[in-house]
Image 1 (tube, one colour):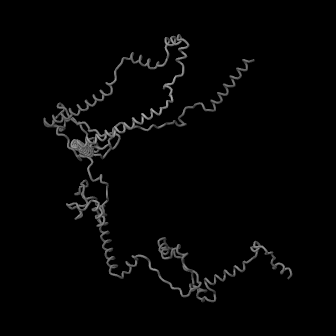
Image 2 (tube, one colour):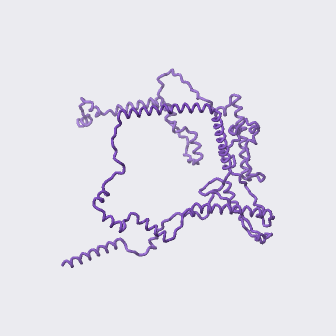
Image 3 (spheres, one colour):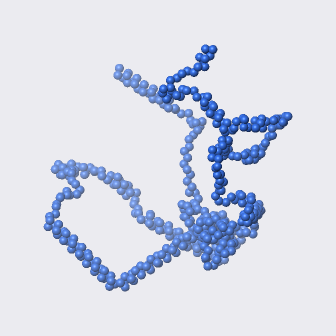
Length: 478
């Protein structure tokens, strides 16, 4: 018994310091308090009924587990509260210490659209529901029509290349007085259910005067009239004369500007140019014959500019300079006053000059405006190369056959269409045969290389040659 008491007896610990308090075992006290708090939360067994504590198993056999599909599991999970809100649920059964608490259900700000749709209580709620129903009916019919049109394809009687204005389809937007601007029309069209995608202004005006299809010249026919053929030949001759004139001008300002010399004269000039600064034999002898004093003088250091002397002005010179500056200022003031008086006298002539200058500026503005307007409809430069008009296709009089069997073809339909697309700023201008291929560095495969000498072999050969040279040197010394 004494042994049991000694085993149960707790070890006494000094507690005079605060650090020794942690050694005290208070587990039993903590467990008692935890049990008490749990009873406050969930209640004690004496307070609960038998139905809460016991369950009567009335099923004789355990039913087979029901296998649910993924869709059924998702529906069941949708009925359960979200896990993110579980922390907000009150699971405690501790009574509220404030018994007379006034619980107020706060209303949400704004309208509850879901409640108005499900349980309409006012006339405007029912009207809104009917409006929504009509909107969705129209939307379903419109989507069905679009689907039918997409399946059937575009109607054959509609020209897809015709430019249409959306304001023509909506009455009241395109008025004659111009009260409704295009931006306002776009805004109204979006509100009435016919939204228009606002594009850039450059898409609404033509950038070239070139037609979509240009008929060929009548003189290009296989059986043209005499006048049409003569007109075509005149155009070709005029174009060729312009080309020849341009080539002659380039030749005149480049090749013809430089004088031509014979090969002997060219070599002589080159030798003279390359030998510039080299002393000849005669010049070297003449320099040696010069006396030593002249050579010393010639080799003496000389500055390019003369030495600067610090010459200070006297007080009398400074006074004179100040007087001259004052006289110059007075002279300039008198000259300006005289010019103002003269300008007042010739006001009419000054007005005429100002008017003439304004007219010149207006003419310059008109010229620049006309040039900008003309340039707007010219072919743009979309790439590196500038667009050039193709040569006219013409048959000489002896090549005219009069029938399609013996006619000599001079044009290509594909080339004509391609050039027209370039002229209408649809395709960039390109030049055939000017594509530069990228330089690719190629290496032979190891399986295709010839058997060569490796670095190790070269090193061994170098060591052997050095050893052989050293041995030969030792034998020579012996």
